[in-house]
Amino acid sequence: MTPAARPGRRVVAVVAFDDVQLLDVTGPAEVLTTANSFGARYDVRLVSPTGRDVRTSSGVRLGVEGTPAALPECLDTLIVPGRRDWRHAVADTGLAALTAELSGRARRTASVCAGAFVLAAAGLLDGRRAATHWELAADLARAFPGVRVEADPLFVRDGSITTSAGVTAGVDLALSLVEEDHGPETARDTARRLVVFMARPGGQSQFSARLVTHRSDSAVVRRVMDAVVTDPAAGHDLPSLARRAGVSPRHLGRLFRAETGMTPGQYVEAVRTEAAQALLESGARTLEEVARLAGFGSSETLRRVFQQRLGVAPSAYRARFRSTVTRAGPGRRAVEDAKNSRSTGPARPEGGRPVR
Image (cartoon, rainbow, N blue to C red):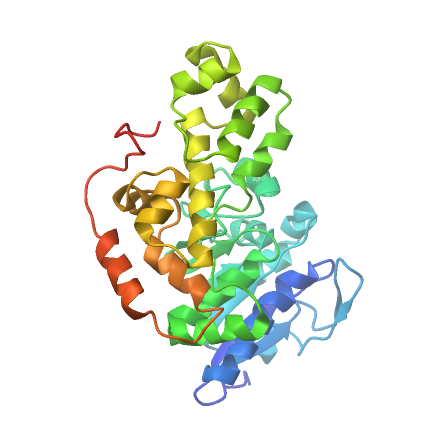
């Protein structure tokens, strides 16, 4: 007989298999079991298709509780980790069938990194938005055209299925599950215990826009990028950037897109967003000061861009990072920030011109 869940526990099944990435498994498991110290009741069970222990990509062996037959009939959460050689995982039809079967028994399903390929092979991502490691996003889109792949976010939630980016993003995903189940305070306490930020929004980029500079072969593009990174608050409209580069605006736009996949305006907005994030994480300035120093001009524009790019308000973003430092409540400043962040109208950088 299939064993029952322990009373009051949320059974979380983690499917492990040979060459699975170790942190894809242990990161979410550690988050969920740590949350139990703060009132959560997760019952994390590691199983393998064969019931045998598995050897991870790092060579570390993981002990499992057995086959999925050892799981209760009804699951709260299914977590599917990944392996870098996703083609091998996809070729395992038994793994895909098992994933589809367990997902049908679970309230929600999540994948970490290349685990999205297993979900896709199981038919669980057809017509859905999904994330994976940014290096694998193009592969996922080509291998499974029915999946709406998003290459940038840390994790993407579409209905009852959540997919995350590479390795450590599984920690962010798991913290978001804890917050969904038990509220932000439990998630913050868990993050503090693990000494990680609580918690990066799912819409946050997997990598810094500032690092794109080093991936460009064009001296013209690198010169423009360096100027933006050095002073995000300066006037960086397309004509001024083109003058700095010594080329026409049209040529700079074409060159920039070819080298980075972004327009100059999109790059400026990304760098300004990262600058604002750093200022908010320090917690020492008002929203208006952050907006001005990061180059957005006003808290209204800052709020709009944060909502569009990260899916959270600036005040909420700051509260997440402040909570990892102090247990004090949000206080008057957070209330004022929340008031300042309520606004309507299109996002506009300093000078009133929309970012393109």
